[in-house]
Length: 389
Image 1 (cartoon, one colour):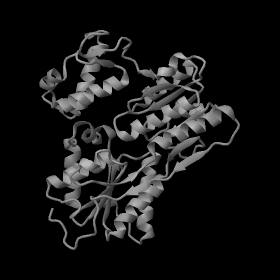
Image 2 (tube, helix red, strand yellow):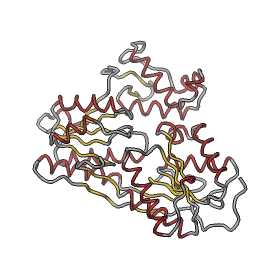
Image 3 (cartoon, helix red, strand yellow):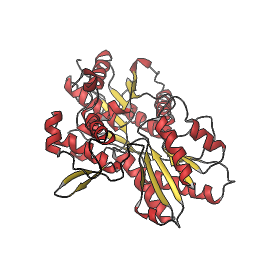
Image 4 (cartoon, one colour):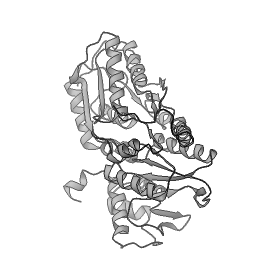
């Protein structure tokens, strides 16, 4: 394995290897691919890492599994961006709706999809589901492709980035029925449905303040251009201001990318580079007694990084993060978190799109759903003693 490949999460390496074999026609449609044990031996990883990679490829329609026989290459694999239809797609009497999202790898995105799918079915639509793999180029290509397919509307969870997708802007300006999910386009009137991220972050930070913390860090992925993250930063800073606590930019760490931070959700351990940067951040700020993390992947990475250098959660460091971690009950320290109404977000996006299709001249709407703070064991009253880092 090269040095550059070692920086790529093992989960991603396995997934890319399989996709390459298929794209290069080394493995043909209906060919059986190696077993989990064979992949684990080849890449020197655990079976759970392989299982996660295969599960993602099955979800994408790239491979399929036959009970007792193994996994096989899907018959319609082309190597191009994939479009997936729901079971009702063969009923051509129902109008077609496309749903685009960057990835499907955690409970949050899975619940969004579940909400979208169930509400579309209820209202008599067919679904095309597409993953954009965090690429604006793929996003642009798929948007054009689904328009050519004749979809009646689009729900899109946009790719993160400092610039807006030209294709989304074009569709918005042309008044094509489109709803943006999870975030919005700042300064541009779009129909959108998202959580009240300002409120959620404000409540989480205020919870830490109520426990006596004033040196509260903020850790996130890169946020420029991603309104959901920008709004959480706003909520964090607003809470500090409301409690007369100065904003200290030295307590901010905000440049990770999603692939790096999501390693802990996919492989059970944090990305080594991210973990070391977090540990350096903690050491540089020994008086920081609490952290607000942007999502579960970042929050869990901080918890793992802290424990490795002898910082106990919550005795030395209180941690709260966005998204209700699905394995909280199994965690050594069940995390305090901000829960979003994931399934309801998806349903609300469908209801808004349905309204736009039926009443195209209506005013554009921005719908915010409230969040809920769930207090568990990762936050505690400020200890008088400070950790020795």
